[in-house]
Image (cartoon, rainbow, N blue to C red; front, side, top):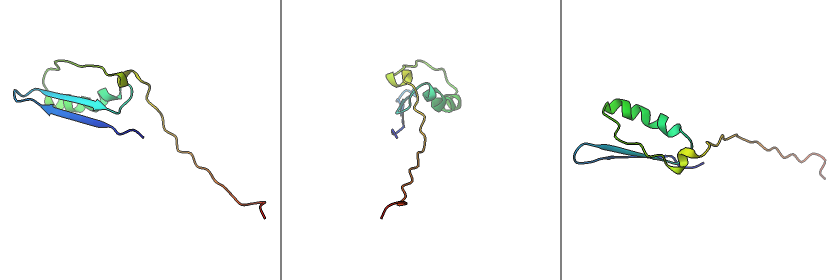
Length: 72
């Protein structure tokens, strides 16, 4: 599983920049939505990364059972 990171930088003049890494697809927008709402300011810019255009991967748990039946 890939590590998901959220970097937040506050500049001396009070601007906030955040960068999401390790999240495929548009899920990054869901991650930053609460932060944007809490800050309540104007969104100055949004840059789309290559990860935003990738398809999210659905993980499935797989279980393998090995038995010794029929072995001498």
